[in-house]
Image 1 (cartoon, rainbow, N blue to C red):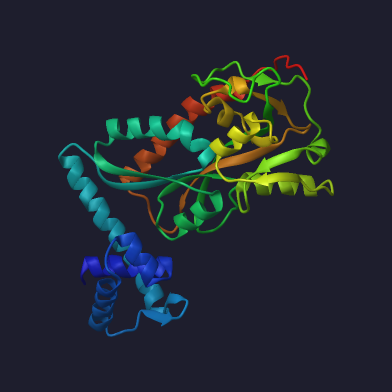
Image 2: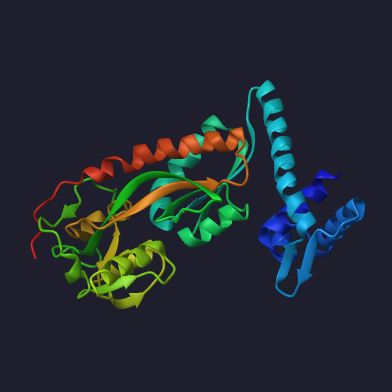
Length: 323
């Protein structure tokens, strides 16, 4: 059995599409189809049901998919063990980060990865938690930080912390063109929390569905029989903050999104509650595919960076803010 053919089949079966698999593998679709067909001829069984919506494993294909994942994992482990003989780990790790965390985590994570895994390859993708969860399940991502991840048998979730979400408004003493500067720990926090019910009365600049932060805000307001007042739907933390600084509305974001903005003095933040509005963050990987040693090392690096970069931001003390 050809390992390349097996790898091609596994990717098609996981993605449910020859077109998506060809793009992920960076090979021409006719060549991909030919290799999978040669595998079917060798095994004398149809492995995939091809239809207008994609490709679905047959009973034999499902069986080969389960074995194929294990075989490919063992091959990768063998390569890693040989790399350890040379004194290094190799392989590729694909990591997903939500936009609100990427700016704070991506650079230190990349530095640590290159220091500790110089022979390995790192791929970082920004995306919505919903889409990254799907990418974990179909093998396009190995690890991801997810907001409000729903427990699934196919996912291994490690809860990290509950992120407090704050109301972010333009600072009353800062103009819309507040100068950029290094992030400061002295972020302005209103001394009085905003009752959750009052959040529904404010004009929100909010991402489009299915953004996890938006869905969480909507669910919490729905418990009170309320809906958010949406001034504008816009994706991208930087764009949201630019509009907030310009006085066009307010936003609900984690505090570190403001701290990493480059101009925290332009904003005032206010706790929401009680109880405090929080959203869980978890480190996730697929439970269907055993992780390699390189992936496990990358997982530890993520935990270290999160503890270093996100820990201090939880200890924000209230400060007086006029208005």
